[in-house]
Length: 191
Image 1 (tube, one colour):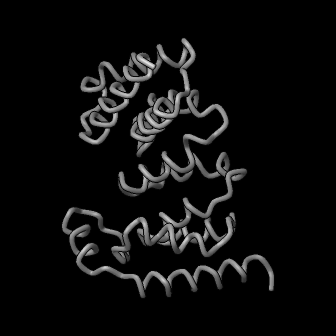
Image 2 (cartoon, rainbow, N blue to C red):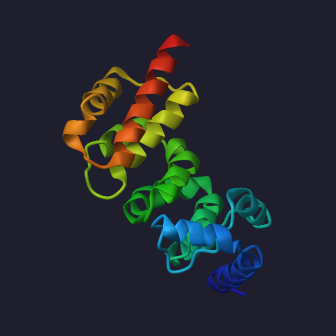
Image 3 (tube, rainbow, N blue to C red):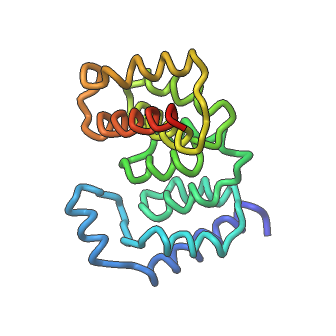
């Protein structure tokens, strides 16, 4: 069986597990909140992690899952992508992240582990389209919480945007992400 067929079979197996784990109440609540995926099984993150643990990291499988407009498949794609492939999918997936929930998971799992993550994140702060600015702030927050120090150039670029975010962006999620990152920044100065 070739790699593509194997990924296809694994994808089908995952979708069967998702159907069995479906939580209609959570799914309905998420739809009501505006998370309008083609399919949303309402499976909680701990259960998704348990499903992901049954499979080895697999780039082809992760890419296949990402392409589905299914909330849980996108989350599992992030969990199953091997780290060496992170640089090849990072910006594509940021631009395709449909909701902040996916972007949150993407930033925490993949983006903060990229080579030169802080530099890339400060570059994303300049980008207005899609989830780039949002992911930039989330990535920097994650990095600062884990003890990463910004270079002077990164710090200058970051603070220049974060401190004046309301004049640059009107999206509430971006403004909140910027404020939270400033809190993590000030905490990193104290440690």
